[in-house]
Image 1 (tube, rainbow, N blue to C red):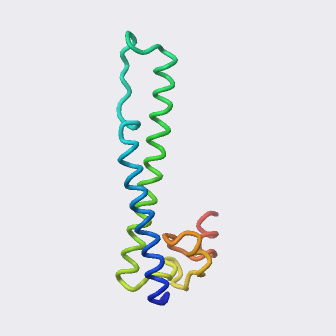
Image 2 (tube, rainbow, N blue to C red):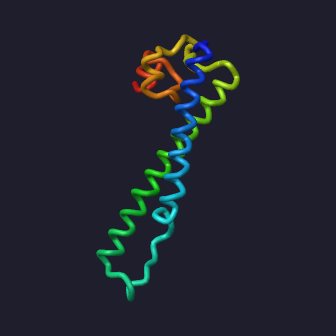
Image 3 (spheres, one colour):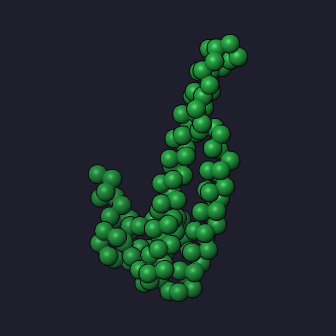
Length: 116
């Protein structure tokens, strides 16, 4: 397991990132809402642009939700004392990898294999 001090450092980073993502989700909620299709107030091109922006906001929101899920899972592994080990093979995850993204659940070898 990752030393307690390291786990605390990663937990703090994860908490900050989770707060940022939650804030962004709240700020962009309006962007993800249904686009009004009233042609009397909005022209066709403006409406198409609004629909495209909505689709982008929805996709970005899904990515945030996925990242939040990874963060929650990492925080749970920290709480359970299981943080820092690959979920696939059980080997320790290199600290440089966790420094890059503390929510990563796997070592580099297993991540490469999963991409194939």
